[in-house]
Length: 579
Image 1 (cartoon, rainbow, N blue to C red):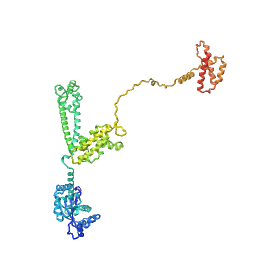
Image 2: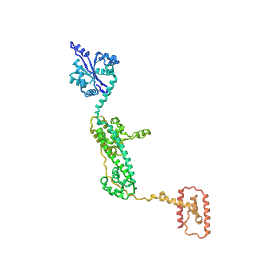
Image 3: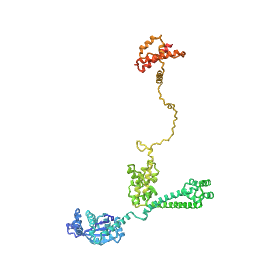
Image 4: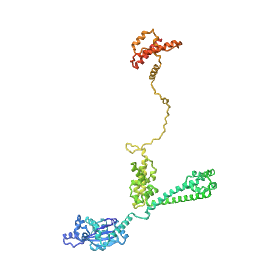
């Protein structure tokens, strides 16, 4: 049996008239060719049909061909009785009784009036659950078969042609009304579940916050010309407006009592600042207008607190699980953004997660960048208390559990918050695991926790290295000695000048010339006395020039390493000669 949301449901009742058995063959024939009655339920009432030709019901696969047209259908079935519902209330009562597996008053009346007169042996029905109830209440044996289900589908296809006296427009209107009524009954509809009040309340709360900010900013700026020091001392907006309303002109601060609005320390500071204030003088009319503005701020603040309490109570009545998961304000903003609680229940968890960040989402899709991780759900307490690294993960988990809570609140029958409390406890446990993940390490079992050693500050004393101040590259002493000797040999032009002064040592010089044909001069001797005569100096200069000319003519074929060795030998020989 189908529900009344599909405009009709069919209960097929097959009543077979028993014949007196003369033989076993006649008994089998009587069960197949008895009178069959069909009870067809519509949104307008109950219709009872009589089957004219039962032989066609044996061919289940080709039964639909007999219902192609209304004329063919009237040859198989004939309307015997139609019991019309008086109003939608009666139709709803009958439909809900069938949904719950009960027999309504109108159905019981029809069964007793029509079916019981025909026979009391067997009753074929499509719904086995309803058949058991009929068997218990009316003592009628019920039979269920696939042929009955096929006949039910065929009757539904030609319902307007078989039921005379009922226009199709009236049938569709009654079907629509019954469908709406049955839907309300299933959802346990009640005025307390109206979420329109939440949408209006949260919108008004946001508007009040904006207006309060504008009024308080104007009040501080206006009164700041007269008493600018008060704005820095009193930071709370409501306390500031109450203080201004009590003080009026700053000259009245000394004689006014501010203990009701301000603590003693701040009150003393305000009185001290009023004596040395740098503000300008204002008239009494200006003070009066500022006082009216302060009155408006105080009244709006009180009304906002009252509205918040109202919103909190409505959220706990309409969506208790959603309120437990994300809070009153965030839950109300989600409902307001979706339009209603039922529309919000249709959204998947991924949409609930980014609800409110549509502009950032489409901008990210257009520019091919990362999509946002959270929208309005970012302001929930669970997301706010996590670190920036885990906010995306927590927002995704919270959105998944919140989507379940929303559907439970919108479509469920219970009005408690047990599901929300349980899911919030799971999320808090998962949040603790994410926070402790940083000190977890993988061990042999994979479950061991890392031992967090106590932190000890180890300071190392470093000694200043002065070698880093010099930009000259460091070299070995031996290499430095060789480079210095080469530089001196290149700079001193008088190195070969002393060779011609030794005519007595000609054979030694000849031997050295034979050994070293490329370099015949000796290193210079150390000068022990300064030359006093200018003539001697001129002779030395001339000898040096001649020696240079000879060096230019002689070919240099030895390498630099051999030259260094020969220089060392010459130095040793000169030392031996001096001795």
